[in-house]
Length: 192
Image (cartoon, rainbow, N blue to C red; front, side, top):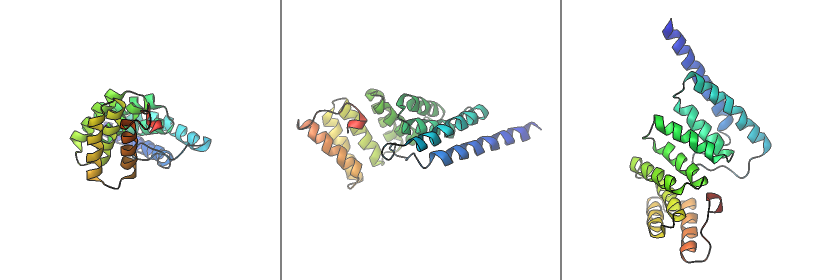
């Protein structure tokens, strides 16, 4: 009898995660960004997903999917401290997941925890060394830390892996403008 209860709990957990995902997937992109400002309807939908994932966590406290999803929701809602907290919780369960490291590093940068962001970027790169976006993220963290020579190397390597990536090209331009004294150093991700 115990096995049936466990399986039914797992089925309920999975159903809740899927229900939450249906609310989340339209508003969260996988690279940590979302389109423009979100309106009240999108915020309402995302906020409706939060208790669904919390309920899923009551059933399966070690649900990486639910913790990751909560991190994404708070990321889109611009509550970066909450986002970082959920991504870090997911990392305690699956520390060798480059995608969770990526999301946590972006959240850390949005919270101005640039040293922590760099550590997370480096860990993600160790796990997924051919991912151009990770080197771009690393370049951003290095730029915030005023380690410009390393940032230039990192963005150049990112472009070597993916020469036409528009985000990386933009980051390279911002970085060079900062180094050349054309613009002031951004103080947050939003200013890049």
